[in-house]
Image (cartoon, rainbow over the protein chains, first blue to last red):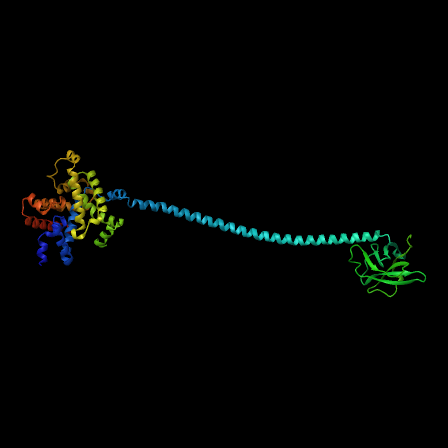
Length: 269
Length: 176
């Protein structure tokens, strides 16, 4: 086939113009696929016709496309979707972050609060324990006091006041003797604290002849609060005396250091 | 991008491809339509109808039938000619048969904003009268070669070679 003659025949110009029959057009199409020079010729013809016809256009036609898109419901939708989505996105982001911050702050606050409460509980526990101890101590005190009161009120008790002796006339003490259970209760409030290296020693005495028997030393005198001491006494005492002795006590009383002395007056039967 | 790819994307209702094709051919169609109806508003209205039809009927185009440009050109010419046959149009317009596209190039005031067109019009006016007639019928009016030969009272072979030479002349002008 003579391609050049085919091109020169003018059929390609008619092909672009759309003046050929469907059958003729298909033939041109097939030849165009086989021969690039025919395609090239068609493209050039088309380009020149487009330029010529475009020149006749009264004005730019780009604005018409917007109307076409609108009528086809194209494009504009896209723009609307974008303009709706964007603020939506921002709204979600901002509120999301805000919510996260609020929750975070709330969590911190709660944690802090929890810590504070735990500390408060610990303090309260300590205070509680302390108060319980105080209550226990008070109970013990009360029980001891009641016990003492009962002892003093007992009808079998023998009260023996011990008066100050010699240069210790300001000193005094009292002995409550319960013969039934072989014990004495010594109220030594009228004695000063024992000096360093010395202790108070309690004596049971029989008078004729004068025989002292040691009832023991009061080692915890200085630290005792109510200065009432329970001491066992199995002797048939006729008098009680208290001397200041070197630590550990003495075999016999140091008479120069006899602070108080009292004679037992037999109680009315 | 390859024209074939663009067209197949457009046939799959790709809006971007549609817009690209519109930008390639709209000015040309606008010219053809305006040349037939000679009214700005009516031409724009037909432009809308044509490209809406192009969008909806995209699947009916196949390259075997012809160039994509030619396919749109046919739709545009038919739409414009249909319009001129409507009663309302006939009543308001005089007979346009005597006018050719070159008249527009000579009288168009809007050419000021279309520098391309000004350049082209300079050369197109130099085209021989016989060329203007044949181009008018074949491209702007969509005459078949047989219709053109009858109208111009020339054998089909002569129409073909004359048109070939006229387009050749045009191409040489545009290349300059």
